[in-house]
Image (cartoon, rainbow, N blue to C red; front, top):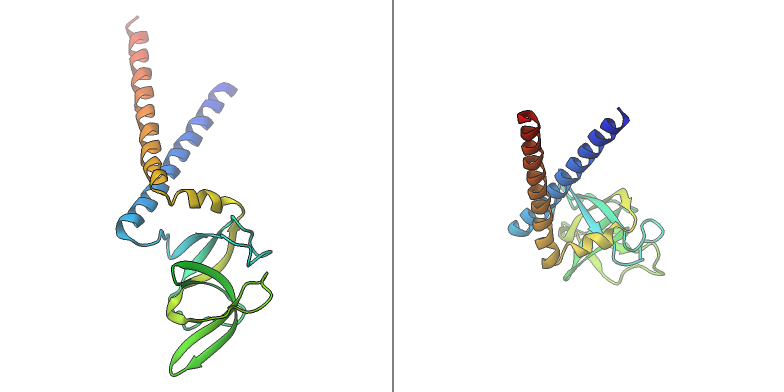
Length: 181
């Protein structure tokens, strides 16, 4: 009886794992095809690549950000993610400026000695930090950004599905042999 319960639990866990891997692969690949960032219900995950915001989040963590619906509405003290040239930066707002109908933000990493040397135009803001972080998972996220990892994200779920199909066929054939005997 215990063995049967363990078998069912293992099947459920492996099925859930396959579904999660397939969903992740779909999300990442569809975002690559469309050229957009992976997003679920207006939330994105980002890898933390530096220690500028420690101890709020550590290097190598992933953080969740809520995409900015109105990038002009952020307040002093909020943590925002913004585009600066070819990279994303997540820092805390230390000043808000309204000039000629435009909003810009002065930012600073919590672990940095001084404020950033630039002002962030509101249209460069991608979103705000939601308070959700997973330590060290950012290292794995960075690996998935490569072409090889994208190929593996297609291959591994396919391999699991193929293995599951073979397993089902073999089990069905064995049951058929037992019923015939």
